Length: 116
Image (cartoon, rainbow, N blue to C red; front, side, top):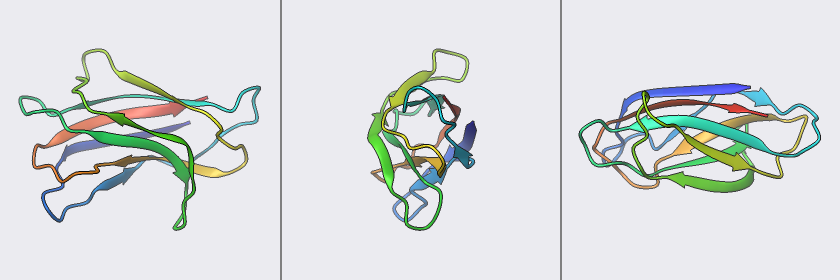
């Protein structure tokens, strides 16, 4: 449904703190959940805490489900993290929001996808 990727992302003290996936629309299915899976890795640096959420695509974005944190390194070639979000509406343009709640100078790379 959607995907994202970032490479050597560091926020510094005034850097970009948010990255978004491609836009998707949840199909009408039996349940109201979306699963995301992905990897994030700082290489040889300490891990970075990133928060993942499902939000409306657009300027005034509602958040659906609960924001979930990933604070460990999950290498691209290793086991990826997986998070399930519930109470996701159908018929809306949505994105995965990846947010760094803290400034970090350790460069982090990652990618992932969302699916029904």
